[in-house]
Amino acid sequence: MTRLLILGGSWFLGRAIADAATARQWDVTIFRRGRAESGADPANVRTVRGDYGDPRDVARLADHGPFDLVVDNLAFTPRETLATAAALEPHFGCASIRPRSDETPEVAEPLRQRLGAMLGR
Image 1 (cartoon, rainbow, N blue to C red):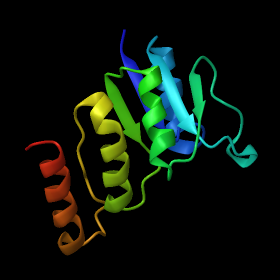
Image 2 (image 1 turned 30 degrees about the horizontal axis):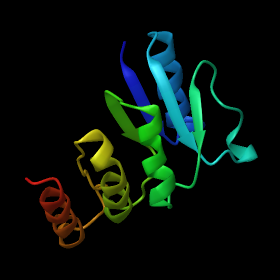
Image 3 (image 1 turned 60 degrees about the horizontal axis):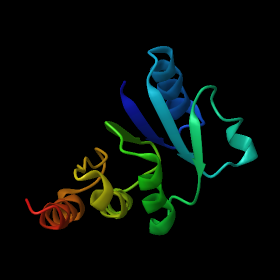
Image 4 (image 1 turned 90 degrees about the vertical axis):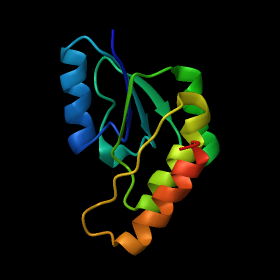
């Protein structure tokens, strides 16, 4: 069975991914703040509540893994993605950065290099 972790899995795209994955009988865990305006937890998922900006909360996800796939719907900048990858990497062993299309190479490339060095690439 495929184990999926969705960071930000209670609203919009995250909820759609969670619904599609559970329909395929995947084991789905979502990480969310639990704010009322984001709605109730999707059905048939494990929910972990925490602050995406706190590396300790993100690292707690290791207690619920391992995961085959991780989808991050919460990051707005490569810097946020790097921080999350750094928190998850010791527990999951791999990560990637894909900056949004409006990020400049001057911002994204140093972050990619830092992540590569952190992962020994």
